[in-house]
Length: 160
Image 1 (cartoon, helix red, strand yellow):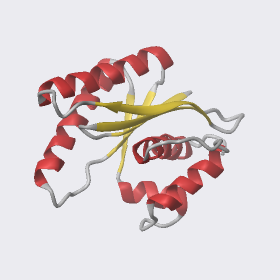
Image 2 (cartoon, one colour):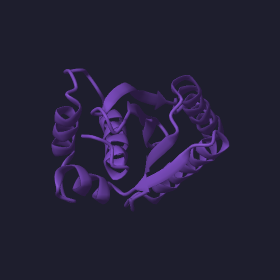
Image 3 (spheres, helix red, strand yellow):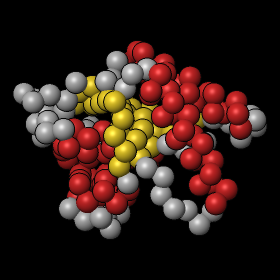
Image 4 (cartoon, helix red, strand yellow):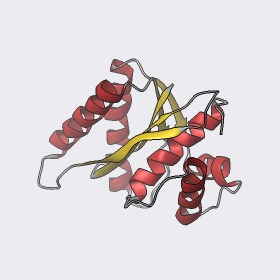
């Protein structure tokens, strides 16, 4: 089964697709980021994000989506923009027939590292170890998306 993990943002959204089964350890099919330009009007940026997500789903055929829940931000304007991006991604997932699971950052950290207070570096380390990822230049948003897909595979009981 293929799982799409998404770490939503309105400027940069991380995504990752994992192949998971009960017979083999999960493997990373693809990961990357959807980026939009601050020069574009916000509605256009949301459309670009939706189109990029649809393209990944249609090309790589995941059947489930693991999406990071919105967490409280001191910057309300940023939180609202990220919430709108999440809404667009949820709509796209629904239109494409993906089953959706949402995870808070605390649940993600706890599920992968054993501590809800783990830092980004600890999460990255666990992701690299569990998937035996070769060294590659990846953005934090990309690692977060991989971590979400990996946590979802764990929650579904796939072999790790």
